[in-house]
Amino acid sequence: MTNREMMLSTLKTHTIPLLHQRGFAGKYPNFRCVRNDCIELISFQDNKWGGAFTVEVSVAFPASEKPNFSLYDGMTIETLDVTATNERYRLPGMFDGWFYYSDIYQKRTLLFGRIYHSISEKEVDAFSPPCGYKLVQKFSDTIAEEICNEINCQLEKAFIWMEKLKKRR
Image (cartoon, rainbow, N blue to C red; front, side, top):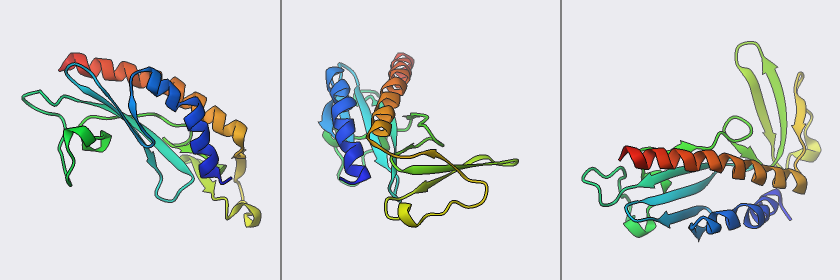
């Protein structure tokens, strides 16, 4: 099983059922919950280089005089996702706003703070860390569960943000 497959399997076991319990429908990567006057949205967005993803939430108000979203490329209200909304909340992630399902090395610098270097599955065996880098995460099924637990905790703050956004409207 690849790291990605392991991460998706763990999400399906530990995080997605919690979304369904809160009334969200859909499947990875997009979930939605239709309420009386709004649509709550959650999207998992994969890093284009792989090995990581981020999670964003938003609320769309379709009946509003001033909608806070733009439909594009054949998108409809039924297929609306977070990327179409004007205001979003991105979970802070665990490293630089991302949830990494790979090995991660870290380096501290005076000017830039911490720099993280993710190692793909293909690179792991041949990788030799540059000078000053130390291993901070060795990916495993236990780390996948920790990522899901962290997402679940951070989603609670995101739900509070959603409620505040709904009250402003």
